[in-house]
Image (cartoon, rainbow, N blue to C red; front, side):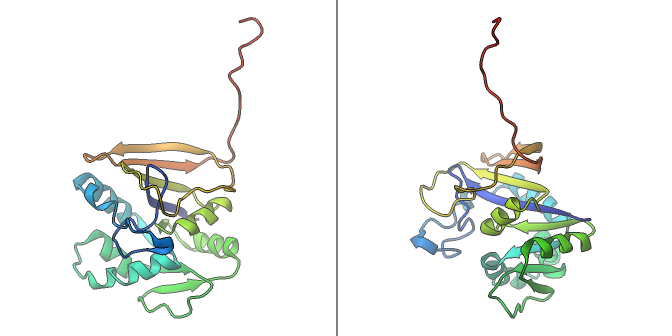
Length: 208
């Protein structure tokens, strides 16, 4: 069975909305799109290239699919590690409303999300990668279907926008499996899911 691996960008206050450009996602009147741009450097590019090199297939939410399909098919350089993978490998869009996906190699999946994604992982030999798609990531985390999360935290507070973790999320524990910080201060941390949180307290023992 393949692994479902998520890569997502967040601000220090947990916002994932519109990291790539001003018009990417303006829902709720969000006017700060493109907030990751000033932090692009060689370290960041190298990490993203390494992630895409491991991809066997992609899973996208509807909004991320719309953003990606409007951009990446136009990037035709075969040496581009992102475009070459996205344009050639299988892509799956989780959507209840999209019926006609015109990006080559794309399949729309709907219905029972847990059943569909489990079957998709079983059919994928390596990494089934989820990029962006914060709302879909939340749903999959709540269903315990995610294996690994690459969480890239950018040194900026936005004060508005859609946040990754919201009230009502299923309590989830993670195990840190790697990390680095780019030259521009982006914290790249990799976490494997580790079940439910454990709890304790700092009460001093009676004989202290």
